[in-house]
Image (cartoon, rainbow, N blue to C red; front, side, top):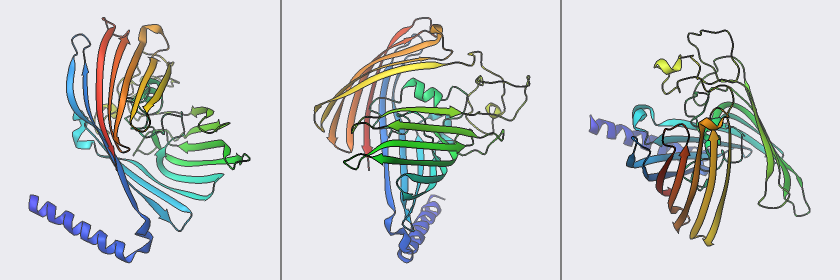
Amino acid sequence: MRRLYISAILAAVSSLSLFAQKATWCDNIRVSGFAIAQYQWSNPKDNEANTFNLRMARVALDGRVAGDFYWKTQIQITGNTSTLASSPRLVDLFVEWQKYKAFNLRLGEFQVPFTFESPIHPIDVGFMDNGQAVLKLTGYSDRSGMHSSNGRDIGIMAQGDFLKNANGRNLLHYAVSVVNGQGINLKDVDQRKNVVASFWVMPIEGMRIGVSGWEGSYARKGNWTYVHSTGNAFVKTMTDTNDGSASDCNLSAVGNKADGFYALGIIPVVKNKVNVKARYDLYRNNAEWNSAKTFYEAGADYYFTKNLRLSAEYALVNDRNLNEHNYSLINTELSIKF
């Protein structure tokens, strides 16, 4: 069986090779990706952890068709041991018309334009993960109970940059999308589309001042014990479309409000070689202090090359959801881009 499987792969590769030789539009296809290996230690009372982990790996293909059209597809694999069978998943698949700098039109599955941090490359975020508010409110480990979608959804988006200054640099950026609201790889359920938009100004090079907004809903088909609800979250996060979590419509007791705040700094000590960094990261799942979880983080990065990096962080965590609020966390990661 293994020999047959390998033979099938070789046959597929040979077919793709012959196809690429005949189809000139394939000449500009680019292969890229990254991988992150992780070691993490933490000591919350009665829930200590000490483990190596394959945090994430992605492989992407992108290119151009007919000059004005850009396309991309990307697959992600994670080391989440509870969903090994379904871990490989499509996170991007879109085509974008890019004839004009001020107006690009994208169709497919893509990163929705919400917050500055969500669209940043996972390695370039600079810390062990996005800030808690981004993770909980932008479609990662989302507060609503949506399955993990890496800040992405399916729909259409218009975006562009305009209003050039004397140096030819654009000062304004916008992005407006209409998406299903169900996350990646799922059709719409409630027939109500979500509108997600960002607008920002870039007064000087390297600075952005902006605002993002998201109006819409996440829904499930299942057994309901009420008529209508706004702003609340489901009790169970959906992990599999075939199990009970996909149709469990019971609501969480955390209410319909959440908030967060984070601030960070990354300072290059040795250019392109060593960074030091710190972050304050607060999230309140019900907008009350009894649910506050705060990370006080400090760490450093060492670049072997521009595409190979070793990172280490220490975090003092204050979690008011636990009986003993304070514990320590150490996170190290080796990341590579290609």
